[in-house]
Amino acid sequence: MRPGFTSFAVAWMLLLVTACDAAADPGPDESFLSEGDQAPSFALPSASGEQVALADFTNHQPVLLYFSMGPG
Image: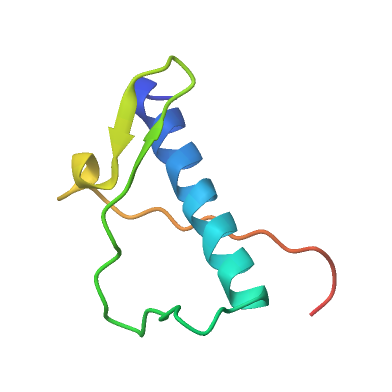
């Protein structure tokens, strides 16, 4: 596995968890992304403590992580 891939995967998982949480309980001021919208910029600490930003992965192949809690 490539060294930067773990940080990238963690960042995407956190983005997906945040998106799922927002979809479960939307507040009155929240707006959602539509298909084709650009993801908002964000940065998170990696397991080694360095900041990893979404912009660090511009022009890289996308990775989709899908988690299911059961049927459906």
